[in-house]
Length: 246
Image (cartoon, rainbow, N blue to C red; front, side, top):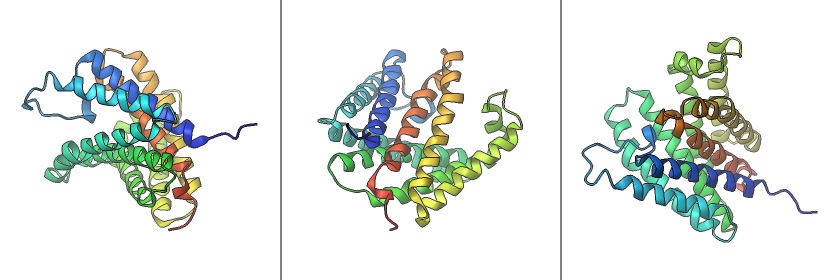
């Protein structure tokens, strides 16, 4: 009986998320909404979304198969890292008081880092620094839930009670799992809890939102981005990088 390979499943889920983002970019002939804030003045902007879409589709497709996973993960890590460094970091530095910019930077960084971990896993190597990087990103996510508590609460399904308190709770979980990853306290558990919570967001918030409002580009892109992000943390949770205290 074959042993369940959680790392492979996480990598495939991340590949599917990237394919979803790429397919939407191709269909809409546009960048991934708020996740790729390419300036309107960018030369050749009408054509470049197609290039972005093809890169995402290629990276995602290669991540689906063991033989090409390292190539796909490397391409994804590099391209998503470019989102973080070229698009989001300058905005965050230029407007340090706007926490939404840091949250956007953390999302792109976490996805790029998860892809890098998948690359190292495919190569039979570890990615120890990735634990700290994703841990910091989780702390940023947690702070965002408190800074934008009312906005976060509005995204909580209406059938859940105490939506504002639920936003605070999930923010606290984000922050605590991030601190645990950075400090080396039960890292596998922390990464697993974070990944499971993010997956619940995808299933309860992002996917229903995209299905209910397919014409809303932000909602449409939100679902595959959320899948990619949660899968990136699952990649970390199933990796050897969280096995030992650094």
